[in-house]
Image (cartoon, rainbow, N blue to C red):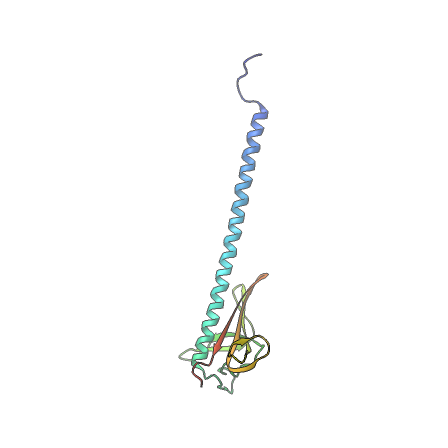
Length: 165
């Protein structure tokens, strides 16, 4: 046999296939990483909107009497608000702005947020129960929902009439 020098076409094709497979793997990993990053960013924004809603409701509760019945329905207390109805926080245009709870959902950029209040029930040992029990007029269950695309984030908390107004 003759001593062959150089690279055959089969060897070159094998190297091209190996490099191509490596590039496809790297591109797939990059795409997956980018999608995960976008998803994390959206989840973080949704969580911030939900937390802002909870803080606005907390501030609203602290600045409004629990059973205060505002004739204009801008500042009804949490004890007066209609249960099972969606609300969203909004700042008033007063000289000293304060939070209001407005009926309906709110669109914020590509997100939709709302808070729904429900009555809270307690058993004989004063624990909160989902069914049965006695209505506690000084506690409201609040479910904050932030939705985007095909996803949603939900936070449930309880607000009490700590001032017993």
